Image 1 (cartoon, one colour):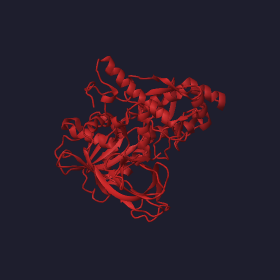
Image 2: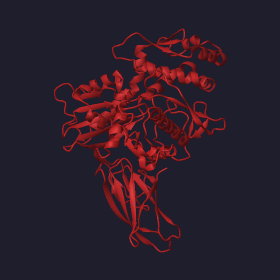
Image 3: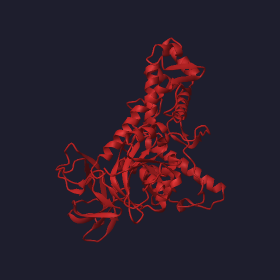
Image 4: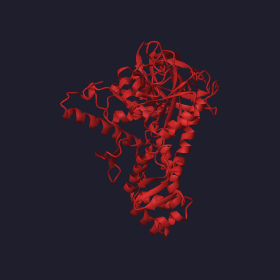
Length: 514
């Protein structure tokens, strides 16, 4: 990992990917950046056009495939792999351009690239991101996948106490061996929650596998979208999206800025700049009335008003928009803290851009008055800075809890690892298999996962297909041949080495999860 541009950390900024009329990807990208928006909420992806809340940003929890498509607000489709690879390529190109302008003699092969993903994402989603990065030009051997709450936790281990808000009081022990603390990573799309323990050798142990949901910052946008829908109606919103996509995006960019200013002690009204002319025109054309008259017929006539190009929202209504998301986050935290062996967790580390919201901070402190809540300065950059540290020391997290069991089977389950089993970094599990009689140069095995403690068969409701393992064979023949497989667990991704017993030839086997 190069240090040519060390010392400068750039926050998140948005960009637009230009697509050709025939939906082919152009080589050029158009960036937009504004000083008024130092952080732009990250938007995750979803195969469907709209989530239940009507928004176009969700998680990677659905079935992931290479052919998965995205739809923009006008329902135009493009391969998700193309979109993600172009987004990553934009970041790569931007960094390389900066280093070239500064005279830094660094080649692509000299850089270790660290790509962060939510810890609650599936192995298939991680593999999808890896393929996107490789398509963007990052060499496979120069790429590491880091889990976001882990990266943030590592970063906070290096921070001085004065840069950890809430750590200045007596009794702060997060960096002392034996201390257990909860990590709550609140990003744009997801909330990731896990529990770490500080070890005597300076590393960290995961005590609870990551849990979470799509209750990040953009879920608040979803409830604001619901309010707009109740005012002017879903069909009019759709027309607005199709006919004025820039105005629609500007509206939610403005909402992103405003929602960061909401404070529990604030009263009065919130002023939100809106594309008034465009919205008013759509209401007149399709509803037969001006926007203020449409508002007067809605359930929000007493809570919202218009003045010029400003939408004025009562502060209490604005706070209520946050409430479902905050309740979901607290519910997730409570379920983790009630797990076996975690009753004595007394410190909560809040990281991620959405954790900077004072409404969330106050709600968590009120719900858990006996816990110490710690927020690093610049919490929105904790993952980014921690990813750099992870790149230098990828074994900082020394063991992880397994989310599910993973097994190979033909209807019958044979466990490799069990739910909540602690697996040290670098752990290996050996298994013996028989390659089927084949005249091809590869053999394939299917792997399954289960949410049950003790599944019996792969066709049970709790079981689902994880992916396929392809093992190359030296000399194709019709006879069966013995193989030994060495599974490498404990890292952020699954790896496997296969050996033909008779020939002694060893291969790096290929997992296909998408």
